Image 1 (tube, rainbow, N blue to C red):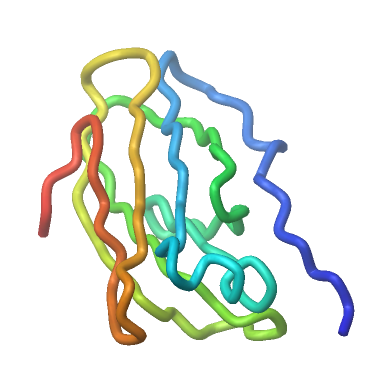
Image 2 (image 1 turned 90 degrees about the horizontal axis):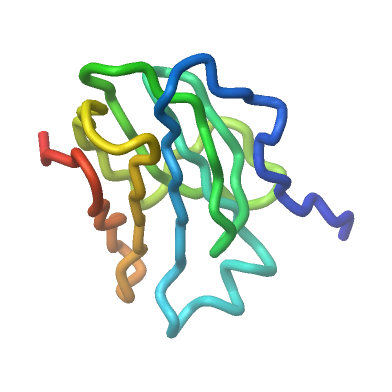
Length: 121
């Protein structure tokens, strides 16, 4: 099996004074499975950013409203969106909007997204 370890999108440089600082975590119960066989994806305003479980990812965030989705895929998949949760995010506060996405324990669980400026849809 090839190692397709996800790398945070470090090429994205902030073009505004605000950054989205998001950390995506699997449930503790299934963490080993997810670290071995899946990778998380953060979608901000329609642009996908492949991330790493438990590693903070910084993305540029212009002031105003944004659409944020978090989901995961099995390694080798390109289009599947498992456990997806969508929220609205408003950037108008501190220079760094800290957000956490936590996957639930059950196999059919979705992510719970909490943090600065997050509103459920």
